[in-house]
Image 1 (cartoon, rainbow, N blue to C red):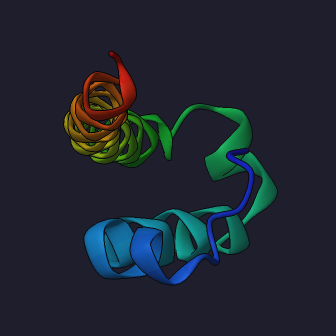
Image 2: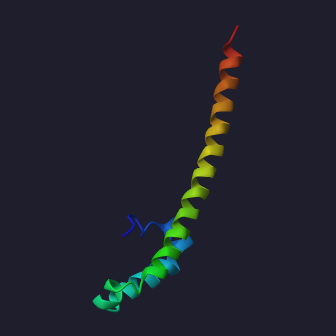
Image 3: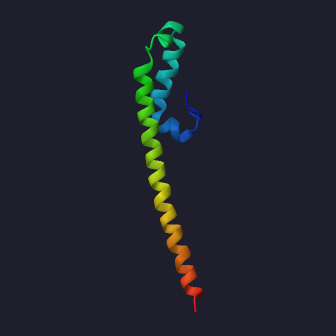
Amino acid sequence: MHVHLSEPQKLSACGDLIQKLDECHNSGFFVKYLGGCNKIRRELDRCLRQERLDRTAKNKEASKHRKERHQQTLDEYDV
């Protein structure tokens, strides 16, 4: 199972899939054991992966801006 699925950003992005997977797992041992929940799990994996890729791209862009500001500050004090 995925960690930290109760975080607000995960619930807003993939909440319906998290709920469906939880319902599937609670529907019975044999359904879960025989792979009845695998399709939902794969959809959730894709959703969480996309959320992670979006977050990574956003963090990379923010890092780029921080580095630019840092370099500007260094250039101002460079004599």
